[in-house]
Length: 68
Image 1 (cartoon, helix red, strand yellow):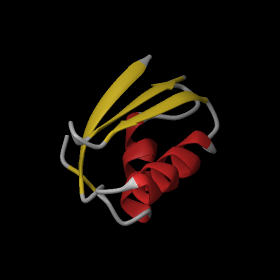
Image 2: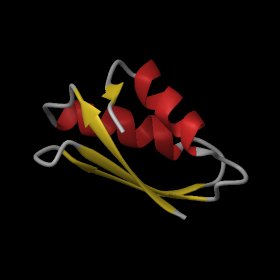
Image 3: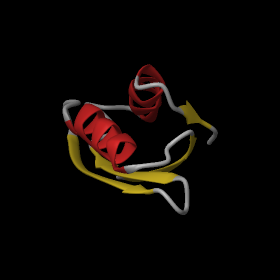
């Protein structure tokens, strides 16, 4: 499945790398795409292995706020 999350607080390439690396390391995640301008993180993942709540928690742990 593909999930698009709106994320506040990302402003630079460091933010992109932090979110991409952290979320990409979760089990079941196939692809992570961060759009700074659109303030979104798109994640292709296996919902059984990695539910949306776990992805959102990982982004929060990196210091960014998941809005939706």
